[in-house]
Length: 233
Ligand code: ADP
Ligand code: MG
Image (cartoon, rainbow, N blue to C red; front, side, top):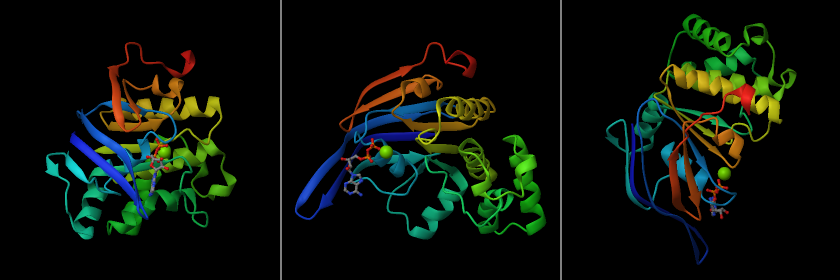
């Protein structure tokens, strides 16, 4: 699903250059649930942003579902992003003046789906994350865990091949974090490929594979022998 070869990325600020990704090689097969672990500043978000086509590497290759991702114009990049990728962020990134239902339906609006159909579809995804009763509420009436569930429903609404989550539990308390990870595990069990960036061990242990990033290099990439379930973490 994802193939990355010898990826490098530097940030230039003035006359300085910061080499953040120093030759990343890794592949993700369809249906995997992978965490990218590393301390703050190790390059996790930089890598995820490249995978999410929000940024480009300086060198190396990236292939997503057999499509080489390089030098795409913004229109084509946006189309691939919509078709292939769903995003989940630490800060939820919901629109405050829209209801939960309308937040989930928004990506479908951009796809040109008719109103009735997109609201039905959005409702089905809200149901999937257990928030049917909250459809008409606004984000400021929801708890952090509920907001992240809405964000997950929104990410799923366009039926992407891959879900990319940058510290999805970073703003949540421990119990709520495990509940959100439990939901992510269930979505993965339906066959969806999911990549999660985290700096928390207990969260990484709820995925099936942990890729350890340190100073822009993968220092370890291992299968999790016993994937933790919510009641055991
Ligand atoms: P992580 O997500 O693991 O905390 P990041 O990928 O966000 O790490 O950042 C890696 C390094 O790159 C950090 O030192 C950060 O300060 C720097 N960095 C990130 N984004 C930019 C940017 N847009 N411009 C300059 N430096 C950046
Ligand atoms: Mg980060």
